[in-house]
Amino acid sequence: MQTEAEVLTDNNELICSTSIERIVTGRDAALKQIEALICQLDDVSRLTSGIGGDVANHWAMRQGHSFDCWLVQPVDKAMPVITRKISTAVSGAI
Image (cartoon, rainbow, N blue to C red; front, side, top):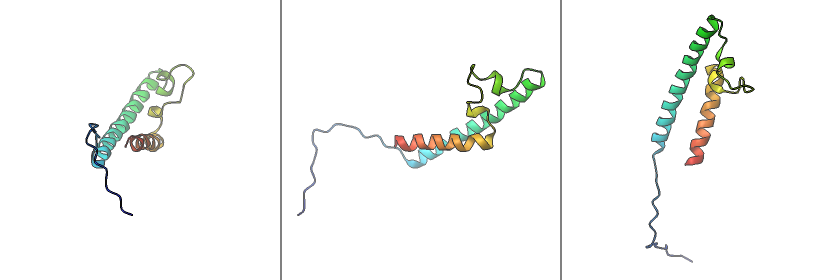
């Protein structure tokens, strides 16, 4: 049994689409900036520690939330987690 395709004439919904290449390029650009930010924050942390102001893990966190931010973790530890979280969010939005 073969069925005919249904034609919708009163449908006015717009389905937005984007290319996978655009998504991946945007994600990769964001990840590069996040990595640079982590490195820059680490440099600032060393400066403040050098003058007795402690490290970012202590002065950049809200009270009771120390060490909860991936941005103050080493790049090799933070980037895989950040990449996974962003990739999961992007794939859920597609």
